[in-house]
Amino acid sequence: MEIGEKLREARMAAGHTQEKVAETIGVSRQTISNWENNRSYPDIVSVLSLSDLYRVSLDTLLKEDKKMIAHLEESTNVVKSRRDMSRLILALTYLLIWAFSILSFWLGAREDAMGYSILVFYVILPLTTIIISVCIGRDESWASSKWILLLFFGFMYMMAGYATFSLANMISLSFETVRWPRLENMMGGILCSAFGMMIGALIRRLGDWRRKRQEIFLAEQSVEKG
Image (cartoon, rainbow, N blue to C red; front, side, top):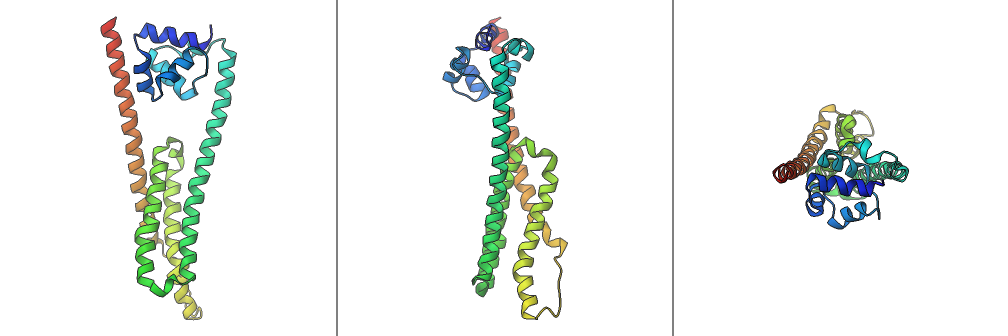
């Protein structure tokens, strides 16, 4: 028996409609129909969600279905590639904005030091750090390296000030006095990043809570019908 038939039987045994299942795991009803008719295969995340929802083991769903196992292996590789690409895009976006902010200072923006300082250090860099950190906070795969990222954003924030105003002052004094970056200047970047990650984590947990409530609701309906 292929996985489509197993999914249909498990759903019907649990007393769920395709509409309710689709709403619970965040896909369309047509997608559920396609899975049950073997027109397409679910990804690993969806298989896990369906296994929990239907109270059927993964072994029961996947046993002897070589096509499905091959599909999961392929989709897992695709997910990894997309995750790596997403991380690369986030990193490049931040670095490009950071580099442009520094370059603009030396291309003439330093003539309006006050305006540049407010725009870059109180608007552009904080907002960029917060937005990217929200994306990081929503992604559980970053969990083991989030503290490193806090230090990274803090370091880049500190170096932005050092590569502009501090360096300009040293040049004007012909490097008679060399000033090194001050670690306390990292705090702005660290705080912005921590704030963004907290928002991202909250969004993720709200989504998990909503899905869990839907699963509980469907389970209660199934018990009542039984």
